[in-house]
Amino acid sequence: MPDLLKNERGFTLVEIMIALLMASLVMAAIYTTTNKQQDVYVDQDQVVAMQDNLRAAMLMMTSEIKMAGYDPLGLANAGFTVAKANTMTFTMDLNGDGDVNDPSEKITYDLYTSGTQRLGRKNPTTNMPVADNISNLEFYYTLANGNQTLTPTNPADIRAVQITVLAITAVSTNNNFGKTSFTTPSGATWTLTSGFRGRM
Image (cartoon, rainbow, N blue to C red; front, side, top):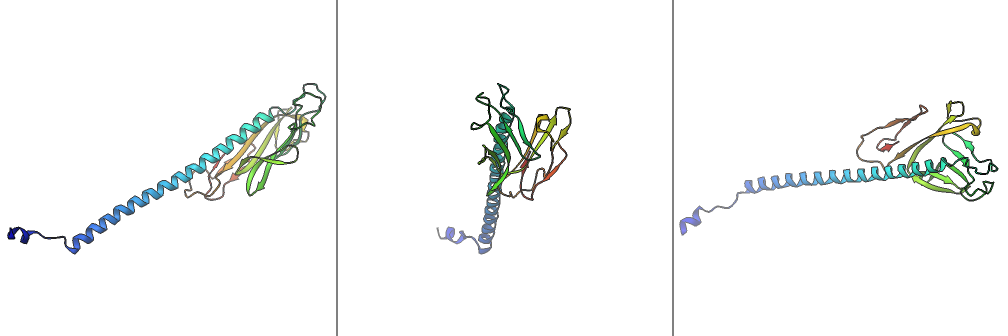
């Protein structure tokens, strides 16, 4: 029995230091991986919110703009009243009473700032947010003669509207990847601020 005790040896200081170093490297790798996964999760969460904003904006605008000029009696003189590159106002006689004075019969879409840049819907004067974090908005009009323009001189000549919306993430992300500039149907170029992601 005494011989067994003589042959048993503990760990040396060098062996313990090497084991601690290896454990530290493993923990550093785990921390780095977890931290990176958290960054990716936050970035993707921002992208999902941006896409939802864009989808909501396009759905609401397209469904209402399709109704511009709706005038079943032909008495309300409904149609586009303001047509600019980034704002439009139109009327529609939704209840068929021969005028456009009722709620939701005169709509304006434009951008406004209230803490964040938003796409707003005025009905008729109060801005209600449609979507948050909208960087740019463009209305590109097709006229009765087939020409396209950002600023029609006579709104009554408008036959179609191409809507372009650039939504951005709410905060700057850690990853700088993806498109940083976008070209609209009219040929304008929109450039993102560094660190933000966008979708058009």
